[in-house]
Image (tube, rainbow, N blue to C red; front, top):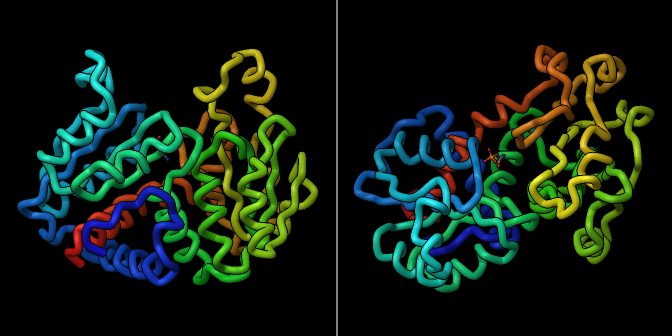
Length: 302
Ligand code: CP
């Protein structure tokens, strides 16, 4: 896989995805091999991040690599008017791989086309977040012992939530039953529903999930993406539309796990945290192993 970028989850075949998940499982057992020694990784974050940036940087550090980059576009020459083209061409000369988060959809594809090194899309606007998807797949396979034939509930902001877009595309490979739970304003966009329709896959749309929660194998909660709304009044209308509480989990399946890419705001009440079905903090930990595997795969090291 040398020199390949990860911009969309569809850049990887099913075989390549499974290879990364297997490699991540190896890193889970032994997270501190020095396979990135001598490598320099640039982390360019034009938007805020806690988990994605820090788990990439933890992954790089544990593997003996070096990190350069910025956590805020205001500390880069973008503030002087430098284009993304010029930033990427320059940074390509300083590193072996670029991890980039950017608010514009399509920016990661653009960067991958001009960079002389592999680019990992760490989130491009409301479009995709494929490294999150690989850690989500790792978490699903680990907790369910399979990726096949699962009933996944995606809840919340399905319009702007890039994590659900990438995860839906990935899980379409494993005969998933999709239940999309969102208010009218935040429904899964047509382009992603068409993606499933073209594969002959069914999906179900709902406004609420309290009556059907007993069917779920995975509930994937999402935050309403405040930063993508142009009108704050529209955000206020939907910001607390779904709140998962522990009392709602009484009649759920024994294998159910609750995932959330995090950060959460109010959509999972803190009383859920103590329930053994809550998996979101373990999911965030899995991000380190999965990102170790992605980095090594893209650099052709493993
Ligand atoms: N899941 C995720 O992308 O979190 P951060 O925004 O904190 O990176």
